[in-house]
Image (cartoon, rainbow, N blue to C red; front, top):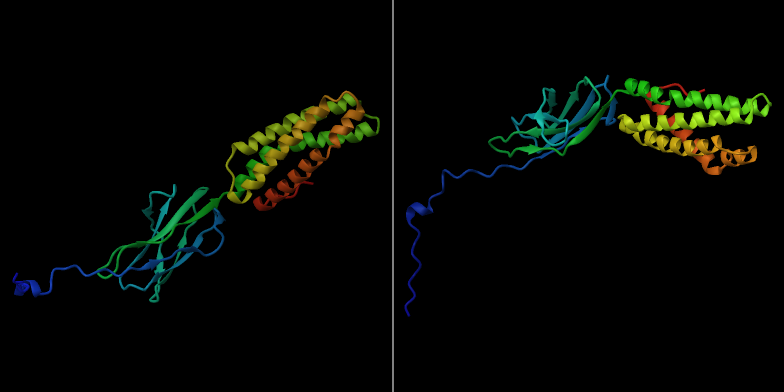
Amino acid sequence: MTILPARPMPRHDRQPNLGQTPSLQTVDLTLTVSGPTEVDVSKSVKLSGRLTPPVSGAAVVIESSGSGDAFAPTTVSVAQNADGSYTAVVPVQSGAGSLTLRAAVAATSTSAAMVSPPVKVYFADYKAAGVQYLSCVRGGNAALDKNDAAVKASNRGALSFNGLKLTDSALAIADRAEAACLREHSWPPSVLANVMDLAVRQDIDADFETQAGKATSITKYNDIVGDSSYDSADRKGGDDAAAIRARLGLPARS
């Protein structure tokens, strides 16, 4: 068998493809929050990042999303430097809530489009949260003060056992209402864990206070209110309350 030589490539096939699109340079884009990721609604948020390598004519745009899914360009001004670094300031927000941000650059004649990994910022209305917190705990604190006063009066012989138990029953009702109120509302992430834990502690307290209100003897009463689980829930709830007040700028409970 005769093996034929390979057919030479036609001249026009050996010419460069002048219409071929050149490959675009891949770039890396970062975005970070320069400071805490939870701020009061009265404060702005500083951002920084870098486009690597620097691309002439590539404008960085800050995009935002309330849900974290669909992003839209913002009017946030971005200051870019020749080395690819940039800074931006997200202005004061009109209300509390979470905002997810990312940086984006459009494709240029030499580089591909790119978006940064998202960052999340929470704008907290600490003043409003503080007002709501005080509203939730007001009834429970008032009932606790009455119960404390009743214990002292009972120890002096100035209040009957039944009168003391009535304040325990009232305290149980108030503590359950407080726990429900705390769970009902939204809270800044920085206090959410403490608020939810305080609600749990109040429910535990209410269980013991309900039992105390039904005690058939002072001995049984003392066994209930002296239970270590009751004391533990009360102390941990107090720690939660102190942490919440400090974060929301509220005075300590006297």
